[in-house]
Image (cartoon, rainbow, N blue to C red; front, side, top):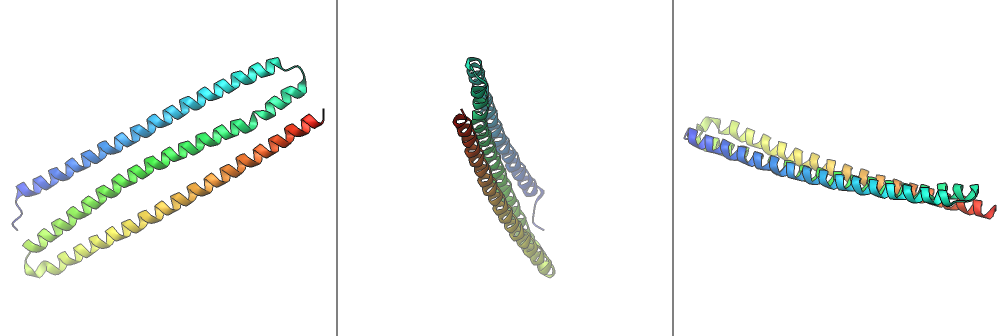
Length: 193
């Protein structure tokens, strides 16, 4: 074989540098997602505290039990809408982090497979004539594995997107139904007066 130890060491060093850069990019992506989630939680908590203070003030100003009941019922829909918005945003952040991570993994896997194919081609050029069949079989196996990996990745993406769409539709329908029920209950209480 004509592959020198220096060439092998350079290849390994290059691959290691690529992996370190991929890990750094994945860490940056994860840190960005954590920052967004922290800001979302802080803003959601702040809004909930502001609403609780406003509700407490309104309850203190209420003069009859019916007004208190209306205030309590009136808080259901906004709280549910805030919860839905928080869950949706959290899901979007998680989905984005997953997509970023998957993209990095796919890029790394693609580079790794290219390196394996290149190594097999180098071996094929430097191998004795009788081993060409074995190297060719290895190359076909790597290409088949790569194709299978790409197919599995596409299926996982489709399943994830479908599940997210179904969850969003179900949550929106629930918020709408609770909102209508709450409005009807408040109207019923007002008409009973």
